[in-house]
Image (cartoon, rainbow, N blue to C red; front, top):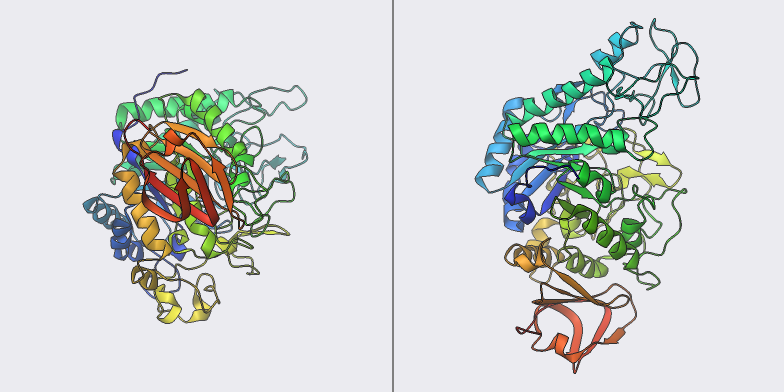
Length: 533
């Protein structure tokens, strides 16, 4: 394993909060969220206890894929504000002890990027992957004077930057080595982009489609080599900055140079099964190609945490002390926790698990109040990926209060980036802050408990006492955690010494007596244990 500088000390204590900027807070009344809106709402994040924010892409873009199609990496999209607005956001966040990360789209640009427009007219330009004249399956015909076709990385409007091919093929002579001139220029461009924004005080980057760089790279060895090179540069020049990957395979990505990787709905040897086995109830965003697996956090109680636990254990063994795994509640591409048959009463158990497990937790904006996945929305900026996979349902405006447009914007309702959740009972930050029994207040208390207890962080030990309903484990020898995501009551008997002196810190519907743990439906509990138990 390549040796890197140890991860910055602050990362082990990170509680991430993902902001979809166009849907978080609109400060100027145009119906689209912006930097100043985020700045105006930083006190909510500080009060909640999160200390690290990452923003979805906010660079100049034609927005055919909601900003993941960038036409200028060094310019911000006017819809969000100016460089000064972003600098103010970063400074005000820092004043509250919050770090800010941007989203780095490393593997492709927009087809409107000047690099691509030049490349489409110049056969000698190798910043993108072009055939010499034919059009293999999956390639898109050249839009310029250059013959042949280009390889897209996702949508056709997102041409893949050329980082080379791991394997050459005489039948495809246009395949280049990762050390060819075009790939070398793109590696330098990544450093230039990161350097530009890190100078503004950003804390690092979450990297989109991080595994997609080198093509025909079955073991990802050549892609990993690029990230290793970039991590070594980052260690030398910005040792307090971090790289998080959208890879979905921490056992590969972290040894390659990332400080942490998310368990995702895709990626890894089982194509995202570990995360899906926790949250995916086949509603909301769902891919027909995913293997069917009953999720653990579901009222029917058919799932198991074993898929996730085994993948986590394998990843931790591969990573060692070189980085972290991260577990999101949801993200801009995947269903919220409150989705389909999973209702608000089931969310406390999910958060009790997510905020006490030894992964870095990432809360998707609005999940802290139980915002729901809103079905049946129109396609918005490329949100639809399949017949049952419309990502717009996870991207609706943040619900701040009960005023017009839920406090998100003063624009007319028909001018909002996406419609609000039409449910008259939709939750809001204001209403839940006024209710000590609310999900928001629970999430705040759990975050405070985690941040005040190293044993609940990623370095604390975990001992599993029961895998099933209820799921029971001990963290750092000091905390007993019980979660029952099912609707039916569940019971398990463990060694009585493991529950000795258990005192509830956050609990609902759990009874412990003589080593028997009884959990009502949707129950959860975090207990302090007597020393030596």
